[in-house]
Amino acid sequence: MTATHPGTRLSRSLPFLILLLLIQVGALGLLAAVPPVSRDALTHHLFVPSLYLRHGGIYEIPDIIFSYYPMNLDMLYMIPLYFGNDILPKYIHLLFGLMTAGLVYGYLRKRLSPAWGGLGALFFISIPIIVKLSITAYVDLGLAFFSTAAILAIFRWLENGCRTIDLVIAGVFSGLAAGTKYNALITVFLLSMFVPILYVRRKDATGVRGGAKGLGYGFLFLLVTGVVFSPWMLRDYLWTGNPIYPLGGTPARHLAHRGEAAGGESTGHDLSRTLEKITGQGRRVFIYRKVLYHEKWWQTALLPVRFFFEGRDDDPRYFDGKLTPFLLLLPLAAFIRRDPRPTVQREKKVLLAFSVLAFFFTFFQSALRIRYMIPIIPPLAILAIFGLCELHRLISWKNRRAAALFTTVVAGTMLAYNATYTTRQFSIVKPWPYIKGEVSRERYITSFYPEYKVIEYTNRFLSPKDKVLCVFLGNRGYYMRFQPLFVRPGGSLLPGGLPEDGTSGLVAALKREGIGHILSRDDLTASWLQNLSPEKRAETIAFFRHHTMLLYRYGGYSLYRVKKL
Image: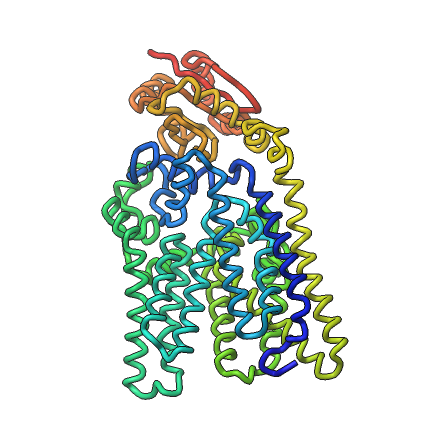
């Protein structure tokens, strides 16, 4: 085993790693082969593209705040949606996960060995949050791919003597990341800072001229990023006057449309204001969790560590996702010693700095979600393999057999931890009955969303132009072929409250909006009623009793027709 390529004796494990990788990819393929039922797919990533297709092109949808977000991957999803296939978008998203695993493999193969690269690719694609995202029609894996590609392109730029073409490629990937999800603005900010710093620290970049040239490279990177990202900024500017809406402030006409008081927020557009907007909730994070979850001070202080140990899917208290402790523990071992290769040492430092800074930029938000951290997972996966390799090297100096045994046990534990999560997904997603044709599409979706049966009933007799007031439906509009108007808290319609003139005013408001039907979730509507004042509660009950007719009810969801005056 040479010093340049530690672990070359592990090359015999490469075929086995490839087999495990194929099994993992096959499992992900099976888990993705069912109709979409993930929340954000139904409220955003499939819903908005489907509306564009029905409309015949991109158009402004003020009622759906997500429609103002950048949509690089969502535009790709329009292609299969056009042909009536809403499962293929999951495979498009999965493909970006596999391409990111390919980047991890390629980098580690070059810096360590093919076997270490294979272990890194398998480790990454089997991390629980990556598995969860790989079987959904989201966009986070696109963000992971473009962000990682931008970082590795900067490494190549430095390695190749700072060729301009390599930096331009990095800027293109950075712009594609920003055009995929606003979270990438943190990546853009950090990398635009890293570029001049990394250039100035080169041996041949000294003095004022070196500093000026470094700043020039940083500007070039930011310029290319902005050009690639510009179509989405131009769209939002034309629609709202804010190129990164809803970040950086909300235009007055949109505040008014949503029933909020205008003039409450600034409309600054610069990147620093955007980052302040993203991270400005930091002071409230700790208070928020203390009040909502009754956490003790030490529990809140340990949140950055708990992120890697306590994650649970679909549970906001536990970060709505799951990572692995190995992403926290093994990267520390990557710095046991100084790598004799200066290039590799520098790259490890950059990966660590990016991961730590991006983590804390993202951490200080009011809503803590593991998938918001997605850009740091590939760098941490790379550092984890570096760390395991360093531990292997350290032990092998004394006993090679002990080193091989240690590495096998740790790698096996890492993969087993991830495999347990993947296996558990089969009992949650339940793909086999649908794949084998034992369960119909309608029955499968209804098992996750009981309102689907009521929605399909409504689709059958309403036209695409008919408006339906959707009460407590969570903005899940993808399967709706009518025009849903989702209730917004604080609005003038249900459940924000009745107009001042009571029932007659509500009926008039519904008529004015052209709303002829109401689709509601019964339990939440009943709970809302209990919180109204006795007068408002009586008026609301009278409205439903005298001015609506129940058409269909299933699974705790009801469809009413509003009677004409």
